[in-house]
Length: 96
Image (tube, rainbow, N blue to C red; front, side):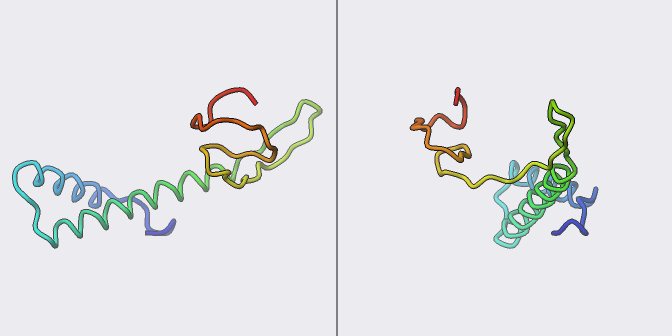
C-alpha cells in the first residue's frame, strides 16, 4: 500500500474479521498470510500519513525565522544525536 492507496473501511473490516475468527478458531495458512499482508499495508499507510504530516511542519524560531525539521540519523540506542553525550540506553528519554 502506498499513499495513493488509503486505508479503506473494507480493509479495516477484513482485518477485524480475521482477528475475530482467530479468537474462535485457528486461521488457515492463506488467512494468516492475508492477515499479515493487510496488517503490513495498514502500518505502511499509517507511516506514510505521519511522514506526510511531519513534512508539512514548519518550526518558527524565537527570532522569527522559520525552518523545516531535518531527519537525524539514529545512533542505535533509542534516540538521535549529533553529539557524543555518553548516554546510556534510556529509550531516548533524559536530559542532554
